[in-house]
Image (cartoon, rainbow, N blue to C red):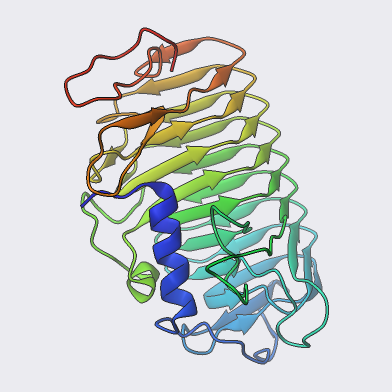
Length: 303
């Protein structure tokens, strides 16, 4: 099986809009509160909770959507083990008027086996409520005021958003295969993580993950970008393309890395080069450009 990040994204969105997933527009599930006063957004895949309004901190249990207007979390937003946050809606689908958007003041934390979909944009990750998914026009810019922390998550997908701190995703994934698992089963999609068109105020570190695919594309990263000790089953996984990285680019211990994308759906070759701009140094596997033909060689240009 050969997928690029954009094909996986289209597959994910198509499965949602076709109704294969139970994330239909729903009225808010009554608010709940944890013992420590944390607001709990809870629901199931067929009847998700809706996060809308302003809260000191939020815990997601089960399934939670941000599709009822602005959701502001002054502190941390935590996706509990095995749960899913969907903040990839552009409209207020509850009232039918206005926009939806997520703003987190502190950290976005995705715990063991959890998933988060944050932000959306035409052409790369269609908003889940775009009325015309074949010619999408909607987008939303979500915000995380501090760090995105993935602690053995299933998958994290963030598009067109502002992350003022660091991204640290470590451990987890769906295993060394491209078989749908967890919430990705409902989308009919392999498990993957993806960061595209974001502005990141710190560094990005992706490490010790075993899954199907990783995409890192067109981000502006103020610090370093590090991809370390990851194993992905897709033959052209770990596509790191067209990023603007002010610090260093470091790739070590991965099965393979690519600064290019395939030009056809039938084969991973030939490939279209999409090099990165790096203000610091390149280290490890991300020094020379990846090969663009089956029997080609790396380089001579920089990754």
